[in-house]
Image 1 (cartoon, rainbow, N blue to C red):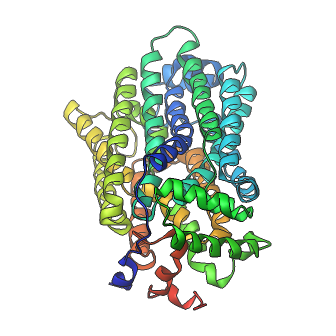
Image 2: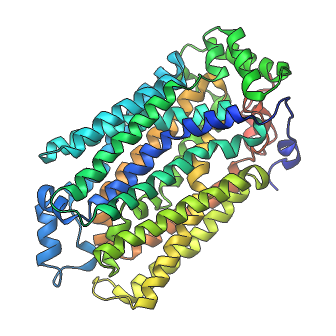
Image 3: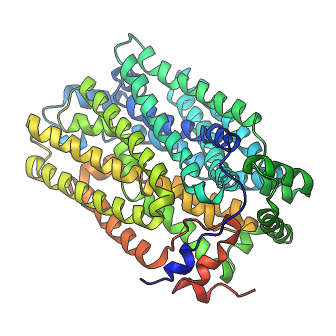
Length: 501
């Protein structure tokens, strides 16, 4: 292999055990993922509501209802205003992490989580009460601020709280919460789809406020991380908390590693400048390219537009929503697989296996759609073919959910030293949100013009990201978060960038 696997996989043992306290703390913190996941699913459901479309996007409603027989099947839902509703949340979410990193560094991870939950709460109420498109979009922008703060702080919080041997599994609680949020939103939409008037879309949008409140109140009950407390100079308090969450008094070795990292972080005046230094090149490159490739798997267009996609493939309204519920269930179950295997098989194995499965599934779906719908978008799937397409999409979602989904949050949050950790995660989240905005804003138009070739577009990037992982992403399983430097020193390429001192 191209890196010194033995050196990287030699796990460093600290004292302590996995305590009920740390499990509860990580579970509560991970609820920050609920708000992100719920919004992904609730957006998908809203875009299939006739009442919602008629009120805010009448041109799409008319096109869908009155010109169905004449309209290109690939272009039924093509509307820049509709995609602006879907992706406007990410306009705010790509800027918010930059401010969140400063809050996280100065006031702790917990403070960012509380702020994120409160702003999301306000945005949800505004969106559910929207009387016009302007009010709807402003609500979406506030949701984006909440998501940006949550996504920046929660993965870092989890990585710092978790013991080394279970850092991967506990960090993936965040992704699990995202998948549960998506599933809950699908179930809420399916349950309310027959409600009369505006309640079919207002209730699901308003329900998000409850999740924002859960995140804010839950975070209020949490302690900050030992790493964050140390940067404030409260050494005794940090060590006491570390002893509590590790369930032992014998934490001196781990505490010394945290203390040294904290002292190094205090000397850094400008972490944004610091992360651009040559010695941090591995972390900077991975914090940029991992979210880049994660979004170019095409997963968000599948999850955002699952009901729309299934309607395009010939499913009825209720059937399309039910199919979206099914993919949501698969998403949750597959994330459980990641929790069970990430600290046993490692990050690289899941990266490879997931990518290969996604390539196979998405290629097959593209071929099926191409053969049946061609370039005109006119055609239909038989029941057997529609079920096969649904199976392949579920298999694709499963592959993402146990690989690039959770690992896209885990790896960037664990590879950065303390002095650039908040900034590294801010870059990861901001780029993730920027690409999500761009892809979702352009997806319906891309589907309209690229036809079934759009799926091959994403397959190309899946092949590229697999090559990138093989050559440039080392294994981080079992490596203490403040001892990650040895991973880079053992890597065939990155070792030249990392100084010996």
